[in-house]
Length: 358
Image 1 (cartoon, rainbow, N blue to C red):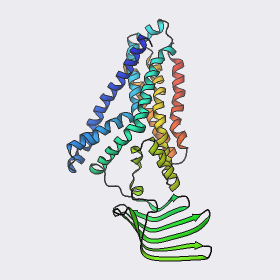
Image 2: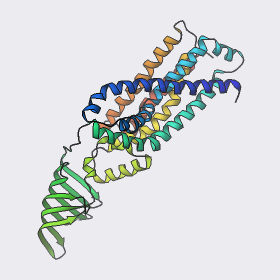
Image 3: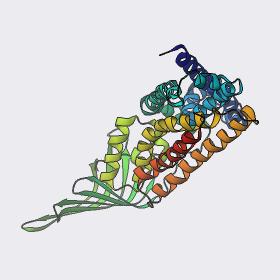
Image 4: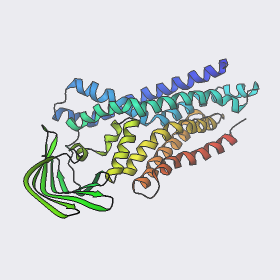
């Protein structure tokens, strides 16, 4: 590590955090202006607004657009170095362009690791507090509108209900089937089942059970029976954004649970999982694009570089969102849809690197 390396690292990291502070400040101001009516209408306490919402909103927003902040930082300070002919002086002193990239990628590695740790383990519990605040003071109560719900709760055990009421935690037209291999062992049919929060069990009303044995059928009827059938109201009251409150290990377990239950949101969950790896990796690609674009001194100066940089960074974010839509709709595999933007922009980065001044 030489003096010039530390100089570039300080410039990179310093400009990165300066860009975060500047843009986050603007974002918070606009967010307050948008939500002030909700805060006043629902009498949200000032303490909760500041410490439960915005204190947890800031790291979430900063990490969400971390790649954009990296790009802006690289474009800004590298363009300034090129405008002051510092890049020319570095290359003229015998330092190759490839060698000059070392401190850039060391800084990018620091930001990528920081982003991965924040996104996988630190921000999820903060998101839990933020989303809880939003559900109380900003958004309307969640209503489950699913119909004809089918779940595999355990191997060989299937639960069906025509609908679930989130207000009184009641499942209607309940059916529970148990299989041993391909053989139906028993089937329960009931008018409804209501969750008892004190017992932490379901009270199944007006039930009818058929048990299939080697001797034949055994039929059982009753007015009430308690059961768990491995589901709770939380399984029906979750918004999709609940995955933002799970760390990486919890998300892996939740994906396996949802696969077992045959949920139709598996693609969305897998996209969320792989995006936690793909977004930090994009820091390296956007750093290379930023350096290759802004290291040449041009007449437009910093303004032209920043304009090109913003156009590329926003196109990357737009393309990332656009490609994940294909995964959610089942057109592409979730893994491929998350990594496609990185592959395409990596090719762009290599092309710009080859055209950069050496």
